[in-house]
Length: 577
Ligand SMILES: [Zn+2]
Figure 1 (cartoon, rainbow, N blue to C red):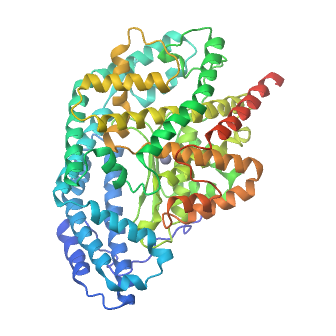
Figure 2 (figure 1 turned 180 degrees about the vertical axis):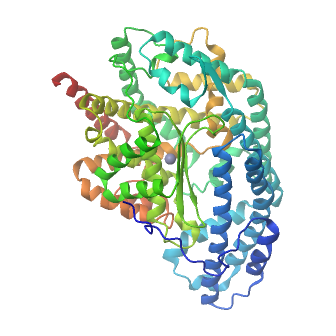
Figure 3 (figure 1 turned 90 degrees about the vertical axis):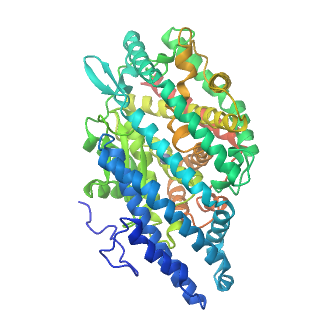
Protein backbone atom coordinates (compact mmCIF):
# COMPACT_ATOMS: atom_id res chain seq x y z
CA UNK A 1 0.00 0.00 0.00
CA UNK A 2 1.20 3.51 -0.67
CA UNK A 3 0.12 6.43 1.41
CA UNK A 4 -1.97 8.85 -0.66
CA UNK A 5 -0.54 11.84 1.18
CA UNK A 6 3.09 10.80 1.20
CA UNK A 7 4.00 14.08 -0.51
CA UNK A 8 1.13 16.56 -0.16
CA UNK A 9 0.99 19.45 -2.58
CA UNK A 10 2.09 22.58 -0.70
CA UNK A 11 -0.49 25.33 -0.31
CA UNK A 12 0.10 28.39 -2.44
CA UNK A 13 1.53 31.37 -0.67
CA UNK A 14 0.16 34.30 -2.56
CA UNK A 15 -1.22 33.34 -5.97
CA UNK A 16 -4.79 31.93 -6.06
CA UNK A 17 -5.10 28.10 -6.26
CA UNK A 18 -6.59 28.23 -9.75
CA UNK A 19 -4.02 30.68 -11.14
CA UNK A 20 -2.12 29.10 -14.07
CA UNK A 21 0.88 30.65 -15.87
CA UNK A 22 -0.50 29.59 -19.24
CA UNK A 23 0.66 32.60 -21.22
CA UNK A 24 2.81 35.66 -20.87
CA UNK A 25 -0.17 38.02 -20.54
CA UNK A 26 -1.13 36.19 -17.33
CA UNK A 27 2.39 36.04 -15.93
CA UNK A 28 3.42 39.57 -16.79
CA UNK A 29 1.32 41.48 -14.20
CA UNK A 30 2.50 39.17 -11.41
CA UNK A 31 6.13 39.59 -12.47
CA UNK A 32 5.71 43.37 -12.87
CA UNK A 33 4.28 43.64 -9.38
CA UNK A 34 7.41 41.90 -8.07
CA UNK A 35 9.63 44.18 -10.12
CA UNK A 36 7.89 47.29 -8.80
CA UNK A 37 7.28 46.32 -5.18
CA UNK A 38 9.08 48.50 -2.60
CA UNK A 39 11.39 46.49 -0.32
CA UNK A 40 11.57 48.69 2.73
CA UNK A 41 13.04 46.28 5.23
CA UNK A 42 14.44 42.82 5.68
CA UNK A 43 11.00 41.22 6.18
CA UNK A 44 9.74 42.74 2.94
CA UNK A 45 12.77 41.35 1.11
CA UNK A 46 12.26 37.88 2.58
CA UNK A 47 8.59 37.90 1.61
CA UNK A 48 9.49 39.09 -1.86
CA UNK A 49 12.03 36.25 -2.29
CA UNK A 50 9.37 33.70 -1.35
CA UNK A 51 6.79 35.26 -3.67
CA UNK A 52 9.30 35.19 -6.48
CA UNK A 53 10.06 31.56 -5.67
CA UNK A 54 6.34 30.72 -5.91
CA UNK A 55 6.07 32.31 -9.33
CA UNK A 56 9.26 30.55 -10.47
CA UNK A 57 7.85 27.21 -9.24
CA UNK A 58 4.59 27.61 -11.13
CA UNK A 59 6.24 28.72 -14.36
CA UNK A 60 8.86 25.98 -14.02
CA UNK A 61 6.21 23.38 -13.29
CA UNK A 62 4.25 24.31 -16.39
CA UNK A 63 7.39 24.27 -18.52
CA UNK A 64 8.24 20.78 -17.22
CA UNK A 65 4.75 19.44 -17.88
CA UNK A 66 4.78 20.70 -21.46
CA UNK A 67 8.28 19.29 -21.98
CA UNK A 68 7.24 15.87 -20.67
CA UNK A 69 4.04 15.84 -22.77
CA UNK A 70 6.02 16.60 -25.95
CA UNK A 71 8.63 13.94 -25.11
CA UNK A 72 5.96 11.29 -24.51
CA UNK A 73 4.51 11.69 -27.99
CA UNK A 74 6.77 13.26 -30.61
CA UNK A 75 4.02 12.81 -33.22
CA UNK A 76 1.63 15.03 -31.23
CA UNK A 77 2.12 18.34 -33.02
CA UNK A 78 -0.16 20.18 -30.60
CA UNK A 79 1.97 19.04 -27.65
CA UNK A 80 5.14 19.99 -29.49
CA UNK A 81 3.61 23.35 -30.41
CA UNK A 82 2.62 24.08 -26.82
CA UNK A 83 6.08 23.11 -25.56
CA UNK A 84 7.81 25.20 -28.21
CA UNK A 85 5.53 28.14 -27.63
CA UNK A 86 6.38 28.11 -23.93
CA UNK A 87 10.10 27.74 -24.64
CA UNK A 88 10.31 30.34 -27.37
CA UNK A 89 7.63 32.89 -26.47
CA UNK A 90 6.84 32.73 -22.77
CA UNK A 91 10.18 31.80 -21.20
CA UNK A 92 12.24 34.38 -23.12
CA UNK A 93 9.95 37.11 -21.74
CA UNK A 94 10.22 35.51 -18.33
CA UNK A 95 14.03 35.50 -18.55
CA UNK A 96 14.06 39.20 -19.30
CA UNK A 97 11.94 40.05 -16.29
CA UNK A 98 13.96 37.58 -14.18
CA UNK A 99 17.06 39.56 -15.01
CA UNK A 100 15.35 42.68 -13.63
CA UNK A 101 14.36 40.75 -10.51
CA UNK A 102 17.97 39.52 -10.06
CA UNK A 103 19.18 43.12 -10.29
CA UNK A 104 16.53 44.33 -7.88
CA UNK A 105 17.62 41.70 -5.37
CA UNK A 106 21.32 42.52 -5.77
CA UNK A 107 20.63 46.25 -5.40
CA UNK A 108 18.47 45.88 -2.29
CA UNK A 109 20.35 47.27 0.74
CA UNK A 110 18.56 44.86 3.10
CA UNK A 111 20.26 41.92 1.39
CA UNK A 112 23.15 42.45 3.83
CA UNK A 113 20.78 41.66 6.72
CA UNK A 114 19.97 38.17 5.42
CA UNK A 115 21.76 35.13 6.86
CA UNK A 116 24.86 34.87 4.65
CA UNK A 117 25.36 31.14 5.38
CA UNK A 118 21.96 30.46 3.84
CA UNK A 119 21.87 32.98 1.01
CA UNK A 120 25.45 32.72 -0.33
CA UNK A 121 24.62 30.31 -3.16
CA UNK A 122 21.52 32.26 -4.18
CA UNK A 123 23.44 35.51 -4.27
CA UNK A 124 26.32 33.97 -6.19
CA UNK A 125 23.91 32.56 -8.79
CA UNK A 126 22.07 35.88 -9.13
CA UNK A 127 25.39 37.68 -9.64
CA UNK A 128 26.38 35.16 -12.29
CA UNK A 129 23.03 35.49 -14.06
CA UNK A 130 23.33 39.28 -14.14
CA UNK A 131 26.95 39.08 -15.29
CA UNK A 132 26.09 36.87 -18.27
CA UNK A 133 22.62 38.11 -19.20
CA UNK A 134 22.39 39.75 -22.62
CA UNK A 135 19.02 40.71 -23.94
CA UNK A 136 20.19 39.91 -27.50
CA UNK A 137 20.97 36.34 -26.40
CA UNK A 138 17.43 35.59 -25.30
CA UNK A 139 16.28 35.12 -28.89
CA UNK A 140 19.40 33.19 -29.85
CA UNK A 141 18.95 30.81 -26.95
CA UNK A 142 15.32 30.27 -27.86
CA UNK A 143 16.46 29.44 -31.40
CA UNK A 144 19.03 26.98 -30.02
CA UNK A 145 16.22 25.39 -28.01
CA UNK A 146 14.08 25.12 -31.13
CA UNK A 147 16.91 23.39 -32.99
CA UNK A 148 17.38 21.00 -30.06
CA UNK A 149 13.70 20.09 -30.26
CA UNK A 150 14.18 19.49 -33.97
CA UNK A 151 17.02 17.08 -33.19
CA UNK A 152 14.74 15.25 -30.75
CA UNK A 153 12.00 15.06 -33.35
CA UNK A 154 14.28 13.70 -36.07
CA UNK A 155 15.99 11.08 -33.93
CA UNK A 156 12.82 10.14 -32.00
CA UNK A 157 11.10 9.26 -35.29
CA UNK A 158 13.81 6.82 -36.39
CA UNK A 159 12.71 3.23 -36.77
CA UNK A 160 14.10 0.19 -38.57
CA UNK A 161 12.43 -2.82 -40.14
CA UNK A 162 14.05 -5.72 -38.39
CA UNK A 163 12.99 -9.30 -37.92
CA UNK A 164 9.70 -8.61 -39.68
CA UNK A 165 8.65 -5.66 -37.51
CA UNK A 166 9.10 -1.90 -37.39
CA UNK A 167 11.14 -1.12 -34.28
CA UNK A 168 12.35 1.98 -32.48
CA UNK A 169 16.11 2.23 -32.01
CA UNK A 170 15.91 1.53 -28.24
CA UNK A 171 13.87 -1.57 -29.10
CA UNK A 172 16.87 -2.86 -31.02
CA UNK A 173 19.06 -3.07 -27.89
CA UNK A 174 18.25 -6.73 -27.10
CA UNK A 175 19.53 -7.82 -30.52
CA UNK A 176 23.00 -6.47 -29.70
CA UNK A 177 23.14 -9.14 -26.99
CA UNK A 178 22.17 -11.98 -29.29
CA UNK A 179 24.54 -14.94 -29.15
CA UNK A 180 24.24 -15.31 -32.92
CA UNK A 181 26.91 -13.00 -34.26
CA UNK A 182 25.03 -12.66 -37.55
CA UNK A 183 21.96 -11.27 -35.75
CA UNK A 184 24.10 -8.81 -33.81
CA UNK A 185 25.82 -7.61 -36.93
CA UNK A 186 22.55 -7.25 -38.86
CA UNK A 187 20.99 -5.31 -35.96
CA UNK A 188 24.00 -3.05 -35.58
CA UNK A 189 24.16 -2.38 -39.31
CA UNK A 190 20.43 -1.68 -39.48
CA UNK A 191 20.61 0.96 -36.73
CA UNK A 192 23.88 2.55 -37.83
CA UNK A 193 22.64 2.59 -41.41
CA UNK A 194 19.37 4.25 -40.41
CA UNK A 195 21.21 6.92 -38.45
CA UNK A 196 23.61 7.46 -41.32
CA UNK A 197 20.74 8.36 -43.62
CA UNK A 198 20.11 11.43 -41.43
CA UNK A 199 23.75 12.50 -41.33
CA UNK A 200 23.47 15.44 -43.73
CA UNK A 201 20.39 16.77 -42.00
CA UNK A 202 21.95 16.40 -38.54
CA UNK A 203 25.23 17.89 -39.74
CA UNK A 204 23.39 20.95 -41.07
CA UNK A 205 21.41 21.27 -37.85
CA UNK A 206 24.58 21.08 -35.80
CA UNK A 207 26.35 23.68 -37.97
CA UNK A 208 23.52 26.08 -37.18
CA UNK A 209 23.82 25.31 -33.48
CA UNK A 210 27.59 25.86 -33.41
CA UNK A 211 27.14 29.17 -35.20
CA UNK A 212 24.44 30.33 -32.79
CA UNK A 213 26.47 29.27 -29.79
CA UNK A 214 29.50 31.18 -31.01
CA UNK A 215 27.37 34.33 -31.28
CA UNK A 216 25.89 33.78 -27.83
CA UNK A 217 29.40 33.54 -26.34
CA UNK A 218 30.65 36.58 -28.27
CA UNK A 219 27.65 38.67 -27.13
CA UNK A 220 28.58 37.87 -23.53
CA UNK A 221 32.20 38.89 -24.16
CA UNK A 222 33.77 35.45 -24.51
CA UNK A 223 36.08 34.44 -27.32
CA UNK A 224 34.85 30.85 -27.29
CA UNK A 225 31.67 29.04 -26.30
CA UNK A 226 33.52 26.54 -24.11
CA UNK A 227 34.72 29.12 -21.62
CA UNK A 228 31.35 30.89 -21.77
CA UNK A 229 29.38 27.72 -21.21
CA UNK A 230 31.67 26.60 -18.42
CA UNK A 231 30.91 29.84 -16.61
CA UNK A 232 27.22 29.81 -17.53
CA UNK A 233 26.80 26.29 -16.16
CA UNK A 234 27.88 27.70 -12.81
CA UNK A 235 31.08 25.66 -12.58
CA UNK A 236 32.46 27.74 -9.73
CA UNK A 237 34.58 24.94 -8.34
CA UNK A 238 36.44 23.60 -11.39
CA UNK A 239 37.90 24.85 -14.68
CA UNK A 240 38.20 23.56 -18.27
CA UNK A 241 41.82 22.70 -17.36
CA UNK A 242 40.52 20.50 -14.52
CA UNK A 243 38.32 18.67 -17.06
CA UNK A 244 41.40 18.06 -19.18
CA UNK A 245 43.25 16.74 -16.12
CA UNK A 246 40.31 14.41 -15.58
CA UNK A 247 40.60 13.14 -19.16
CA UNK A 248 44.27 12.34 -18.48
CA UNK A 249 43.51 10.59 -15.18
CA UNK A 250 40.84 8.47 -16.83
CA UNK A 251 43.27 7.59 -19.59
CA UNK A 252 45.86 6.57 -17.01
CA UNK A 253 43.76 4.75 -14.40
CA UNK A 254 40.63 3.52 -16.16
CA UNK A 255 41.72 2.57 -19.66
CA UNK A 256 44.13 -0.19 -18.54
CA UNK A 257 41.17 -1.91 -16.80
CA UNK A 258 38.91 -1.35 -19.83
CA UNK A 259 41.58 -2.87 -22.09
CA UNK A 260 41.95 -5.89 -19.81
CA UNK A 261 38.18 -6.35 -20.08
CA UNK A 262 38.38 -6.15 -23.86
CA UNK A 263 41.22 -8.69 -23.96
CA UNK A 264 39.16 -11.10 -21.87
CA UNK A 265 36.17 -10.58 -24.16
CA UNK A 266 38.31 -11.31 -27.23
CA UNK A 267 39.65 -14.46 -25.65
CA UNK A 268 36.27 -15.79 -24.50
CA UNK A 269 34.54 -14.99 -27.80
CA UNK A 270 37.52 -16.24 -29.79
CA UNK A 271 37.34 -13.08 -31.93
CA UNK A 272 40.23 -10.67 -32.41
CA UNK A 273 40.00 -7.86 -33.08
CA UNK A 274 36.41 -7.26 -32.02
CA UNK A 275 33.89 -5.62 -34.34
CA UNK A 276 31.47 -2.90 -33.09
CA UNK A 277 28.67 -5.46 -32.60
CA UNK A 278 30.72 -7.66 -30.27
CA UNK A 279 30.60 -5.48 -27.17
CA UNK A 280 27.14 -6.15 -25.75
CA UNK A 281 26.93 -9.92 -26.08
CA UNK A 282 27.70 -11.93 -22.98
CA UNK A 283 31.33 -13.00 -23.42
CA UNK A 284 30.68 -16.24 -21.55
CA UNK A 285 28.07 -17.16 -24.14
CA UNK A 286 24.99 -17.19 -21.92
CA UNK A 287 21.67 -16.24 -23.50
CA UNK A 288 20.28 -12.75 -22.77
CA UNK A 289 18.44 -12.36 -19.50
CA UNK A 290 15.05 -10.65 -19.39
CA UNK A 291 14.53 -9.55 -15.79
CA UNK A 292 11.04 -8.15 -16.46
CA UNK A 293 8.33 -8.13 -19.09
CA UNK A 294 6.51 -4.86 -18.64
CA UNK A 295 6.69 -1.57 -16.78
CA UNK A 296 5.04 -3.03 -13.66
CA UNK A 297 7.66 -5.77 -13.56
CA UNK A 298 10.40 -3.22 -14.06
CA UNK A 299 9.14 -1.21 -11.08
CA UNK A 300 8.95 -4.37 -8.96
CA UNK A 301 12.58 -5.30 -9.57
CA UNK A 302 13.91 -1.74 -9.14
CA UNK A 303 11.83 -1.17 -5.99
CA UNK A 304 13.10 -4.41 -4.44
CA UNK A 305 16.69 -3.32 -5.01
CA UNK A 306 16.03 0.14 -3.59
CA UNK A 307 14.20 -1.42 -0.64
CA UNK A 308 17.43 -3.21 0.35
CA UNK A 309 19.30 0.08 0.33
CA UNK A 310 16.60 1.95 2.26
CA UNK A 311 12.90 1.07 2.54
CA UNK A 312 11.96 4.73 2.19
CA UNK A 313 13.57 4.90 -1.25
CA UNK A 314 11.45 1.97 -2.49
CA UNK A 315 8.33 3.55 -1.00
CA UNK A 316 9.05 6.69 -3.02
CA UNK A 317 9.22 4.72 -6.26
CA UNK A 318 6.02 2.81 -5.51
CA UNK A 319 4.29 6.06 -4.65
CA UNK A 320 5.34 7.51 -8.01
CA UNK A 321 3.92 4.46 -9.76
CA UNK A 322 0.62 4.88 -7.92
CA UNK A 323 0.52 8.61 -8.81
CA UNK A 324 1.15 7.90 -12.52
CA UNK A 325 4.53 9.66 -12.42
CA UNK A 326 6.32 7.05 -14.54
CA UNK A 327 6.45 6.56 -18.33
CA UNK A 328 8.93 3.76 -18.84
CA UNK A 329 8.33 1.61 -21.89
CA UNK A 330 9.63 2.36 -25.37
CA UNK A 331 7.18 2.88 -28.22
CA UNK A 332 7.12 4.63 -31.59
CA UNK A 333 7.03 8.44 -31.51
CA UNK A 334 8.51 8.69 -28.08
CA UNK A 335 11.58 10.81 -27.52
CA UNK A 336 14.84 8.96 -26.92
CA UNK A 337 16.72 8.87 -23.66
CA UNK A 338 15.64 8.96 -20.08
CA UNK A 339 15.31 11.69 -17.49
CA UNK A 340 13.68 12.77 -14.29
CA UNK A 341 11.96 16.13 -14.33
CA UNK A 342 10.27 17.79 -11.38
CA UNK A 343 6.85 19.38 -11.63
CA UNK A 344 7.83 22.25 -9.33
CA UNK A 345 4.25 23.51 -9.02
CA UNK A 346 3.49 20.41 -6.91
CA UNK A 347 7.12 19.40 -6.18
CA UNK A 348 6.64 15.90 -7.62
CA UNK A 349 9.21 14.08 -9.75
CA UNK A 350 8.35 12.43 -13.06
CA UNK A 351 10.44 9.65 -14.65
CA UNK A 352 10.63 9.31 -18.43
CA UNK A 353 12.55 6.49 -20.08
CA UNK A 354 12.71 4.18 -23.07
CA UNK A 355 13.43 0.90 -21.40
CA UNK A 356 14.24 -2.41 -22.98
CA UNK A 357 13.54 -5.49 -20.82
CA UNK A 358 17.19 -5.95 -19.86
CA UNK A 359 19.19 -5.38 -16.71
CA UNK A 360 19.97 -2.00 -18.27
CA UNK A 361 16.27 -1.14 -17.98
CA UNK A 362 16.42 -1.93 -14.27
CA UNK A 363 19.53 0.20 -13.87
CA UNK A 364 17.86 3.11 -15.65
CA UNK A 365 14.90 3.03 -13.30
CA UNK A 366 17.11 2.76 -10.20
CA UNK A 367 19.12 5.69 -11.58
CA UNK A 368 16.09 7.90 -12.18
CA UNK A 369 14.73 6.65 -8.86
CA UNK A 370 17.84 8.14 -7.23
CA UNK A 371 17.09 11.51 -8.83
CA UNK A 372 13.51 11.28 -7.64
CA UNK A 373 14.53 10.52 -4.05
CA UNK A 374 16.84 13.54 -4.22
CA UNK A 375 13.99 15.80 -5.35
CA UNK A 376 11.65 14.44 -2.69
CA UNK A 377 14.22 14.80 0.12
CA UNK A 378 14.80 18.45 -0.72
CA UNK A 379 11.25 19.44 -1.66
CA UNK A 380 10.70 21.43 1.52
CA UNK A 381 13.46 23.93 0.71
CA UNK A 382 12.83 27.54 -0.28
CA UNK A 383 13.55 29.26 -2.58
CA UNK A 384 12.83 26.92 -5.49
CA UNK A 385 16.44 27.29 -6.71
CA UNK A 386 17.56 25.34 -3.64
CA UNK A 387 15.36 22.35 -4.50
CA UNK A 388 17.73 21.25 -7.24
CA UNK A 389 21.45 20.65 -6.86
CA UNK A 390 24.17 21.15 -9.46
CA UNK A 391 24.24 18.16 -11.84
CA UNK A 392 27.65 17.06 -10.57
CA UNK A 393 25.88 16.21 -7.33
CA UNK A 394 22.45 15.25 -8.73
CA UNK A 395 24.17 12.43 -10.56
CA UNK A 396 25.75 11.22 -7.33
CA UNK A 397 22.19 10.66 -6.12
CA UNK A 398 21.34 8.58 -9.20
CA UNK A 399 24.63 6.81 -9.92
CA UNK A 400 25.22 6.33 -6.21
CA UNK A 401 21.82 4.64 -5.97
CA UNK A 402 22.83 2.34 -8.85
CA UNK A 403 26.15 1.50 -7.20
CA UNK A 404 24.53 0.70 -3.83
CA UNK A 405 21.86 -1.41 -5.56
CA UNK A 406 24.67 -3.45 -7.14
CA UNK A 407 25.33 -4.97 -3.75
CA UNK A 408 21.82 -6.49 -3.69
CA UNK A 409 21.44 -8.10 -7.09
CA UNK A 410 21.32 -11.52 -5.45
CA UNK A 411 18.01 -10.50 -3.87
CA UNK A 412 16.28 -10.13 -7.25
CA UNK A 413 18.09 -12.36 -9.75
CA UNK A 414 19.12 -16.02 -9.82
CA UNK A 415 22.78 -16.36 -8.69
CA UNK A 416 24.28 -16.66 -12.16
CA UNK A 417 22.29 -13.67 -13.41
CA UNK A 418 23.21 -11.60 -10.35
CA UNK A 419 26.85 -12.38 -11.01
CA UNK A 420 26.57 -11.47 -14.66
CA UNK A 421 24.64 -8.25 -13.98
CA UNK A 422 27.23 -7.20 -11.37
CA UNK A 423 30.10 -7.87 -13.77
CA UNK A 424 28.30 -5.94 -16.52
CA UNK A 425 27.55 -2.99 -14.26
CA UNK A 426 31.09 -2.75 -12.91
CA UNK A 427 32.45 -2.97 -16.45
CA UNK A 428 29.98 -0.33 -17.67
CA UNK A 429 30.85 2.02 -14.81
CA UNK A 430 34.50 1.93 -15.89
CA UNK A 431 33.81 2.05 -19.62
CA UNK A 432 31.35 4.92 -19.19
CA UNK A 433 34.10 7.12 -17.71
CA UNK A 434 36.08 6.62 -20.91
CA UNK A 435 32.98 7.42 -23.00
CA UNK A 436 32.20 10.55 -20.97
CA UNK A 437 35.74 11.82 -21.50
CA UNK A 438 35.39 11.12 -25.24
CA UNK A 439 32.21 13.20 -25.45
CA UNK A 440 33.57 15.96 -23.22
CA UNK A 441 36.92 16.19 -25.01
CA UNK A 442 35.03 16.25 -28.32
CA UNK A 443 33.05 19.30 -27.22
CA UNK A 444 36.23 20.99 -25.95
CA UNK A 445 37.65 20.44 -29.43
CA UNK A 446 34.53 21.66 -31.28
CA UNK A 447 34.19 24.96 -29.47
CA UNK A 448 37.90 25.80 -29.37
CA UNK A 449 38.41 25.16 -33.11
CA UNK A 450 36.37 27.92 -34.70
CA UNK A 451 35.73 27.55 -38.41
CA UNK A 452 36.46 23.82 -38.56
CA UNK A 453 34.88 21.73 -41.29
CA UNK A 454 32.53 18.79 -40.87
CA UNK A 455 35.33 16.48 -42.02
CA UNK A 456 37.75 17.87 -39.43
CA UNK A 457 35.09 17.42 -36.76
CA UNK A 458 34.70 13.77 -37.75
CA UNK A 459 38.49 13.34 -37.69
CA UNK A 460 38.60 14.77 -34.18
CA UNK A 461 35.92 12.32 -33.09
CA UNK A 462 37.79 9.36 -34.55
CA UNK A 463 41.04 10.48 -32.85
CA UNK A 464 39.26 10.62 -29.50
CA UNK A 465 37.74 7.20 -30.03
CA UNK A 466 41.27 5.92 -30.61
CA UNK A 467 42.41 7.59 -27.41
CA UNK A 468 39.57 6.44 -25.14
CA UNK A 469 38.00 3.47 -26.92
CA UNK A 470 38.63 -0.25 -26.79
CA UNK A 471 40.53 -1.73 -29.74
CA UNK A 472 37.90 -2.33 -32.46
CA UNK A 473 37.99 -3.31 -36.11
CA UNK A 474 36.02 -0.68 -38.08
CA UNK A 475 36.99 -1.90 -41.55
CA UNK A 476 34.28 -0.97 -44.03
CA UNK A 477 32.38 1.01 -41.37
CA UNK A 478 34.37 4.23 -41.57
CA UNK A 479 31.36 6.43 -42.31
CA UNK A 480 29.31 4.96 -39.48
CA UNK A 481 32.24 5.53 -37.16
CA UNK A 482 32.84 9.11 -38.26
CA UNK A 483 29.20 10.06 -37.63
CA UNK A 484 28.61 8.09 -34.45
CA UNK A 485 28.76 11.28 -32.36
CA UNK A 486 25.46 12.34 -33.92
CA UNK A 487 23.72 9.74 -31.77
CA UNK A 488 24.91 11.51 -28.59
CA UNK A 489 21.96 13.77 -27.87
CA UNK A 490 23.83 15.87 -25.30
CA UNK A 491 26.13 17.29 -27.98
CA UNK A 492 23.02 18.71 -29.65
CA UNK A 493 20.54 19.34 -26.89
CA UNK A 494 22.57 20.26 -23.80
CA UNK A 495 26.12 21.28 -24.79
CA UNK A 496 28.84 20.56 -22.23
CA UNK A 497 26.37 18.86 -19.95
CA UNK A 498 28.28 15.57 -19.76
CA UNK A 499 31.51 15.80 -17.79
CA UNK A 500 29.24 16.14 -14.75
CA UNK A 501 28.53 12.43 -15.11
CA UNK A 502 32.22 11.61 -14.66
CA UNK A 503 32.60 13.90 -11.66
CA UNK A 504 29.49 12.34 -10.16
CA UNK A 505 30.62 8.82 -11.00
CA UNK A 506 33.76 9.41 -8.96
CA UNK A 507 31.49 10.46 -6.09
CA UNK A 508 29.31 7.41 -6.66
CA UNK A 509 32.38 5.13 -6.51
CA UNK A 510 33.29 6.70 -3.18
CA UNK A 511 29.73 6.22 -1.91
CA UNK A 512 29.80 2.57 -3.00
CA UNK A 513 33.13 2.08 -1.26
CA UNK A 514 31.71 3.64 1.94
CA UNK A 515 28.52 1.60 1.60
CA UNK A 516 30.39 -1.69 1.36
CA UNK A 517 32.17 -0.91 4.63
CA UNK A 518 29.28 0.70 6.53
CA UNK A 519 25.87 0.51 4.79
CA UNK A 520 23.85 2.31 7.47
CA UNK A 521 26.40 5.09 7.90
CA UNK A 522 26.79 5.61 4.16
CA UNK A 523 23.02 5.84 3.59
CA UNK A 524 22.57 8.23 6.51
CA UNK A 525 25.23 10.58 5.08
CA UNK A 526 23.77 10.14 1.58
CA UNK A 527 20.40 11.31 2.88
CA UNK A 528 22.03 14.29 4.63
CA UNK A 529 23.74 15.37 1.45
CA UNK A 530 20.62 14.95 -0.68
CA UNK A 531 18.43 16.85 1.76
CA UNK A 532 20.59 19.96 1.21
CA UNK A 533 19.32 20.16 -2.37
CA UNK A 534 21.29 22.92 -4.07
CA UNK A 535 21.55 25.18 -1.04
CA UNK A 536 25.32 24.76 -0.66
CA UNK A 537 28.33 24.84 -3.00
CA UNK A 538 29.43 21.55 -4.57
CA UNK A 539 32.36 20.74 -2.26
CA UNK A 540 30.05 21.19 0.75
CA UNK A 541 27.33 18.93 -0.77
CA UNK A 542 29.87 16.17 -1.36
CA UNK A 543 31.26 16.61 2.13
CA UNK A 544 27.78 16.41 3.70
CA UNK A 545 27.27 13.09 1.90
CA UNK A 546 30.58 11.80 3.29
CA UNK A 547 32.39 12.22 -0.05
CA UNK A 548 35.22 14.25 -1.52
CA UNK A 549 34.59 16.57 -4.46
CA UNK A 550 37.22 15.43 -6.98
CA UNK A 551 36.67 17.00 -10.42
CA UNK A 552 40.22 16.15 -11.60
CA UNK A 553 39.92 12.49 -10.70
CA UNK A 554 42.94 12.57 -8.39
CA UNK A 555 41.51 9.67 -6.38
CA UNK A 556 40.64 7.52 -9.38
CA UNK A 557 43.62 5.16 -9.07
CA UNK A 558 42.47 3.81 -5.73
CA UNK A 559 38.79 3.67 -6.63
CA UNK A 560 39.37 1.82 -9.88
CA UNK A 561 41.58 -0.67 -8.04
CA UNK A 562 38.68 -1.39 -5.66
CA UNK A 563 36.32 -1.65 -8.61
CA UNK A 564 38.56 -4.14 -10.37
CA UNK A 565 38.99 -6.16 -7.16
CA UNK A 566 35.19 -6.36 -6.77
CA UNK A 567 34.92 -7.37 -10.42
CA UNK A 568 37.51 -10.14 -9.94
CA UNK A 569 35.70 -11.38 -6.81
CA UNK A 570 32.42 -11.60 -8.76
CA UNK A 571 34.21 -13.37 -11.56
CA UNK A 572 35.42 -15.99 -9.07
CA UNK A 573 31.77 -16.59 -7.98
CA UNK A 574 31.37 -18.41 -11.26
CA UNK A 575 34.38 -20.63 -10.69
CA UNK A 576 32.93 -21.94 -7.43
CA UNK A 577 29.35 -22.25 -8.71
ZN1 LIG B 1 20.90 11.07 -14.25
